[in-house]
Image (cartoon, rainbow, N blue to C red; front, top):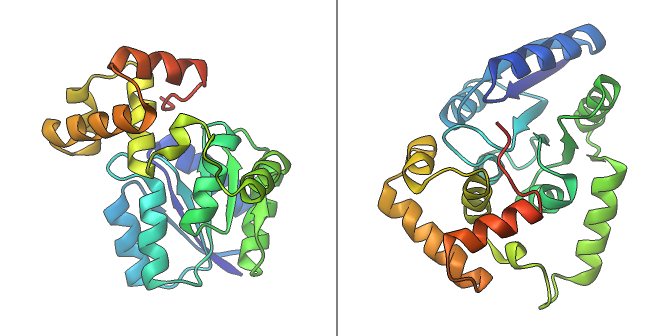
Amino acid sequence: MIRVLVADRHPVVRTGLRAILVRRCHIATLGEAETGPEVLHLIAKQPWDVIVLDASLPDRNGLEIVKEIKRTRPKLPILVISDHPENELAVRALRAGAAGYISKKATPAELVNAVLRLAQGQRYMSPAAAEELITALGSGYPSDQAPHERLSNREFQVLCLLGSGKSVCRIAEELERSVKTISTYRARILTKMEMRSTAQLVHYALQRRLTEPA
């Protein structure tokens, strides 16, 4: 029997994940969380065997939550799930400390397999994500890496939101940060990516399909 905490910003997704896990796994406890603080509160309150964590929580970047969890519970396995293309977030998730990564487009069988493997102390990566990880580790993040790979996890999230057509004010509201803070992130992104305008960032994000899932 395993104890699983599911954290996702969408109630419907949480309900779906819960239904799959309850039906196909031997669940002792199954908890739910919607925000970063809820995740951290539940982790501090009781023990868990696996955390299934959305990469894009409404108030915090999921990869930041991964790092925070690993500081206090270094052995707790975390499975990051996302709508982003696997080759964009898989490497970031593993480097942040996650034990596994799958797409929200994965089959129920793959989700169950991933959760069970993490509960047994193993890791899980989909074939596409594993191939990307091997490529990234083998290259050692070369100097000719793609411009968006120079960004921090938060900067990458802001880039994706800009690519979705959201304004600085809207992004500040969604991430619960000040407009000044988001403007600072945008300025850093422009500098790191060697671009001059938000329009260039949006065009780049659209070309690379770096948009925040709805």
